[in-house]
Length: 65
Image 1 (cartoon, rainbow, N blue to C red):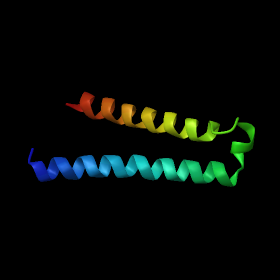
Image 2: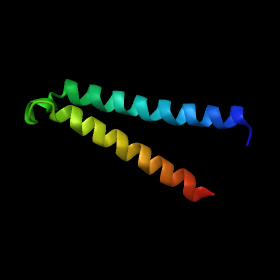
Image 3: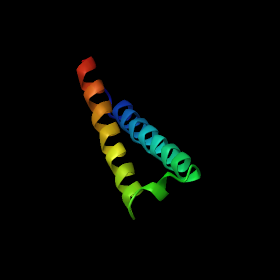
Image 4: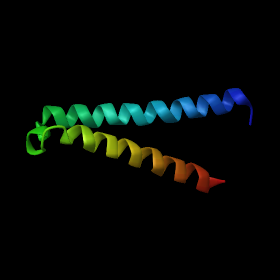
């Protein structure tokens, strides 16, 4: 695979995960879900979801072969 193709793939991978996190964070903010978490708990949840999303995408990408 050429470097440009690989760079495009990685860029799109990162951007999709970031956009999903922004969307989830925005929806939870408007629903005021953060009121049910201790201070900073919503940020911790967002980081956990980001790591989980990256790990799942990497596993799926690597298992395709």
